Length: 142
Length: 142
Image (tube, rainbow over all chains, first blue to last red):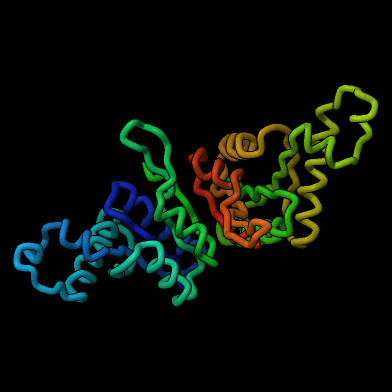
């Protein structure tokens, strides 16, 4: 089995990885840190000039950048974990990946602050909570 | 430290207790199973004839019934855990109790089915997720 840490590009990502590692240590399981990119995000990241050239984006390129983002969160958390990059709708991809792997837990940063300081529950986290058959561990994303 | 299982009176309660026990076993911690009753629920449970007599409801009576409900969930789950009864707003009481105890996790049944079969996220669970500084483990409530 495994514990899945679902990370976005926020400051909360290393905390999500650390918490997943803590669960993994307690249960003797490895950690997979998953970041999901949509094609639109890939283009907006400006790590590519695809939007200028109008070429088709190779799926493998998107997945590689997503994996790099997961790897950055692991580096910041400074723990042992495997980065995984996926492409598509974040909540859908995370839930189906975790269920395919028979994961024990999915760890997410659920709560964030809006620009005006109000506590909000993230829409990706909410969708994961509603759709996953696996227990979801929600930590503060602030 | 401790792991808090927050239970309602639904069929999901023993699953919440079992999952909390699993976390407690992994981390070497004891489990407290908390049920919170409002005064209104206490009256509607018809374990009292207070509504007929118009007498003041003793707080201790409400807390005792809440603890009995927590104890029932523990019995059904058939694990080692301590029942705790509280009175007031469920989400507020659970969050402040868990934070006072320095709990490692709060386990809740997040998802339920509406009468028409739609997946919904429970309002108490949602409020706990938004307000707790402690990680919240949400399991399927169905």
